[in-house]
Length: 83
Image (cartoon, rainbow, N blue to C red):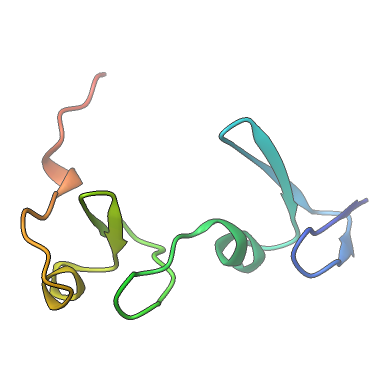
């Protein structure tokens, strides 16, 4: 069994997330989100969806970015992808 790095639960169905060459162990998506998801710089909610980035700052929505006085919101949805 593996121990969740957030809550300490020793769980037989724990899973690993490898990000930026670091392996994390969690027992639930809730713990993974708590540890890995960024927080909106305006309202502090965890950004679980796409969010928006402006000049290296992350927000849960364009509304929060504008509330912080940001302009030039980057919409990642229209980014080109490779098949």
